[in-house]
Length: 533
View 1 (tube, rainbow, N blue to C red):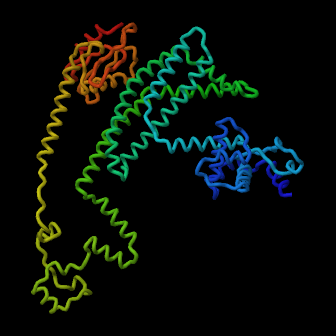
View 2 (view 1 turned 180 degrees about the vertical axis):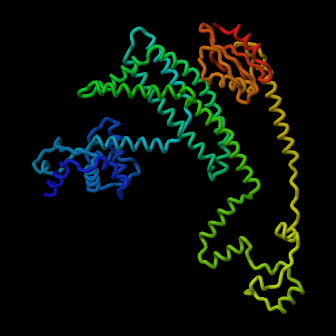
View 3 (view 1 turned 90 degrees about the vertical axis):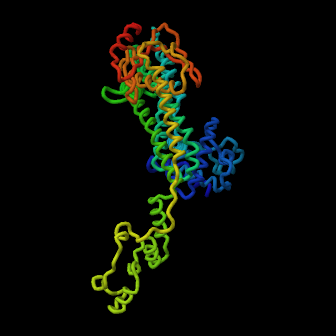
């Protein structure tokens, strides 16, 4: 009787809202439900669709609470009622009538249950996985765009390869954007509220700064190449590839119609426009790549300021805000109201002020006037305060005079470092800002400071909104250098620049770098004469 009623209850379709599949998250035994649903997910990854209760136990993760057979069946029944699982009769191994009448079921995900599990997996991955700035994603996006450009330049479009390239491009681009947003959010949180583990934060700040600087350099170079490739793809007719992707999107639909095809085409067009705006931007609106670059660059001085503030706090050990927070905790933990009053008087010294000047005259006056602690202040005898007490709150310095800290050696060291940085910057400017047009391959071996300066001016030129196939002009970030950049000759080989850190390879641009204080008209004329047509 019990088995028959259980079977009848299982065979009835689940009722209620389509969001009932999320009810297990707020259930008292939520961790048990989550373990069982993860077991079904792992089994499906190994192409096992339906599971018996005994097989579910085999897929449960190590460390999961041991469930009895009855508890496991009751849990599966509850998940079925919520709509996460579906159950079907299991008669594959039935040999007797008694076994046939016994409730035996195969469990598998429902459509809503599987969608719920995928949503929760994506939520866990998005929240628990740390963000990152993916330089490899930039390179892969560029490679995929170049492959798509080659496919569109052919006389006959290979629709299968084009659709595959668009799908890979969409997935990689979405991953790049979401991970970058998560990483910059975590950086901002570490700046606004540094971790309590100050030593850990200070230990990793060098790696974080190098990480940001490396990504900024990769983003500058990749953005220019991606922007050029995007313009070339659009001139070759991206609409053909988007139409092929829309047709592939509805190819497996039961009865595809023109409305579904138009909706799929509009969806792919929006994805392409989003990719285009991220790298190219709109007229008068900076691209998201430029915004991300600015945020990453702005995070560097903010991190340095946070490090300076933490070092100052550790050195001085005096922080009024921290003192008030500690005092507030003491007030919150005081057991009685009398303790609160004592703590208030001890912290702020709000006690009767008759002890400020007590001598024979004041004692005699008190005895004569019979003033007590309850005497109103306007009726009590006056107290005479010294000018020093009125000005600074105390009549004499407390304790010995604090010794002066000699910072002359530290100041001299900082001065020497600043002078050395100025010398390196001046040498780098003299090496690069010659005012003469030359190819990148003609540059001498560069030091690290010269390489940083070169990448700075190249990045400013390449991030401009001008047509990349025309001459580009820009000013360095500090406004001291002017650069004019001409596109390389198509037949020219790649430029290889020798540096202290290794070799830098890239397009062999023709560059002219001059001091911004000098008039760049003459240099621009020489640059235009040498630049390739």
